[in-house]
Amino acid sequence: QSALTQPASVSGSLGQSITISCTGTGSDVGGYNYVSWYQQHPGKAPKLMIYDVDKRPSGVSSRFSASKSGNTASLTISGLQAEDEADYYCTSYTSSNVVFGGGTEVTV
Amino acid sequence: EVQLVESGGGLVKPGGSLRLSCAASGFTFSSYSMNWVRQAPGKGLEWVSSITSSSTYIYYSDSVKGRFTISRDNAKNSLYLQMNSLRAEDTAVYYCASFASPPQWGQGTLVTVSS
Image 1 (cartoon, each protein chain N blue to C red):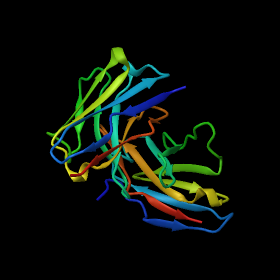
Image 2 (cartoon, rainbow over the protein chains, first blue to last red):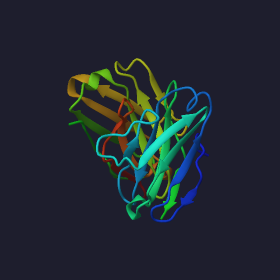
Image 3 (cartoon, rainbow over the protein chains, first blue to last red):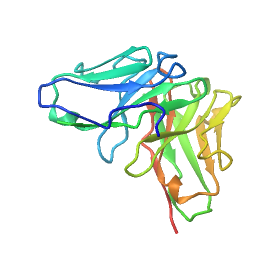
Image 4 (cartoon, each protein chain N blue to C red):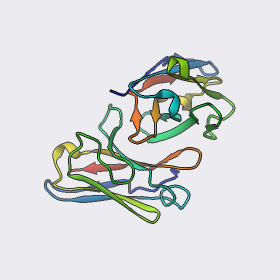
């Protein structure tokens, strides 16, 4: 069982918006502003999409946005595109390590 | 440009040993904590171990404690993972990663434990 809880799957139609939740505790998500989100296509390494709760690395589409409230972080993908179909993982810093969510399969 | 390049993966028999390396460049390696993260086939991401910048603090997941040893050589900008008593369930792609801002990951190296 993963330390952070994500829905196993989320689906949406082209052009729609979807939101993936990531629920932890006050010792991880709620305690630090170090939540990151990764996109992973089959056979590929994880790609950083969001870091420090809501920052986008250079080159990541502005269709990806994120936020945090209490112990739950959220990733929103707006204007869903076919290439967004992938697995998404959240992660959070803790005092001694990092913890991951179990991953969410996004289907377009 | 930040680069993390893992090496040392391969096929090993159960009970065997393997040493992974991660060569870092493009940032001040000695200033950052580093981590190993793994992903078993068809499974999610799992944190394995972390080491602080001066190796003062080291942490392991329960699944590898007592079998794996993380270390670093700041003079060589390198991170290591010595893996002993390997089991089939250790089969995974192993990534070295920095969770600084922004986080940086390597492309991974595959470790297969099988007879």
